[in-house]
Image (cartoon, rainbow, N blue to C red):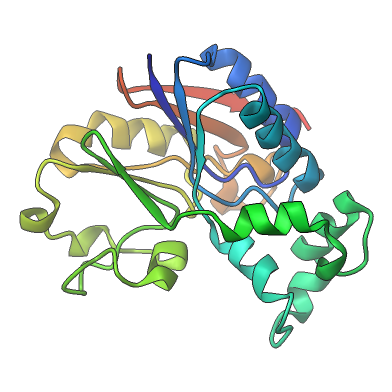
Length: 230
């Protein structure tokens, strides 16, 4: 029985399924997904359907909310400032459902997104989408920070964290950067699992080394990588 964590699938259904094959996920294992299933990639609906299939088949899967799920849910009642999202990331999600507006997405999908947790604690790990705001008395109390915060490593209060390890996504890293964080895990106690899968083929310098979906074996502390095959 193992525990695996994956983050930031972003509509890359084929890559997600290939990564599940690579880790040989079984029904005795638990899969933790750290948010951002939708937007940017070609098949947001397919990613959610793949999760539904796992749950239906009896695989233990726990899903966290990411900032892109939060944006999608917000667009149901408030489009303020979301013009660009509707023309880019959001449009790709709507296209995958063959609809023109988020309220046309079937309610079963929307309800699934609404029920997602903001963080999970399990066996010495804190799992969250983006990170923790250690400037707060309780770093887990602000839901927005859990979804969107960046550049928080320097603020970690290790007296509060204790021996727990933080697993997160949201900020894409090159594969080499993720591997380096694993090497320093015992000391620094955080690991970013966002390999920028959806950015495969990007010519932007800051995307160099990205384009992979990453799974972390929380039991054996081992990384698995799957290149984008969309």
